Amino acid sequence: MNRQGGKAYGLLKEQQEDKLEGINKEFLESSKYDDVEDLGAKLETFKKKYMEFDVNDEGDIELMGLKQMLERLGQARTHLELKKMIQEVSSSASLDSISYRDFLRMMLGNKSAVLKLIMMFESKKEEEARPSGVAPKRTVSSLP
Image (cartoon, rainbow, N blue to C red; front, side, top):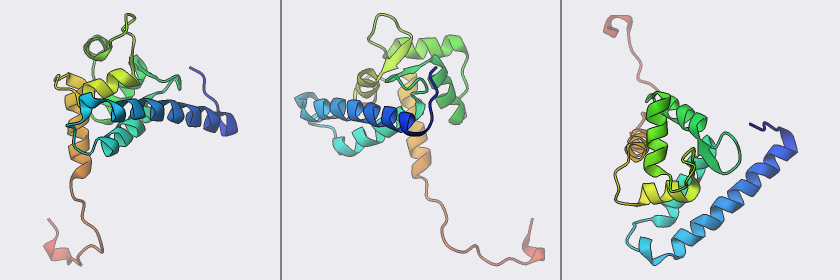
């Protein structure tokens, strides 16, 4: 894993974002996904999520990136389960990582992969309304 900081890291992330944006354009122009509601917004969300867990900064989510993603979601899995998830989603022969195209096909397609269900569960969790504003005043006697 190549960990860089500063300008080099920023440049690397910018290049990665440009590459993923190009793939998003392919999906936007494809007639296969014409029936997907808010496709542009979904693709942007998927791009951000994908970049967050691409720990090797090479454009693929590998086993450790998937492991970190699921641990953050409270869905820790064994290495064998992670390999099976990658196998469900990946179209490459190596089956050791998930490309962005495979990730998008999974998220936008009809196939129900375990990883897709977990990602959908996470997005629902983020949508839950959180209280805003000042907390109501309470007295000591009202506390549990």
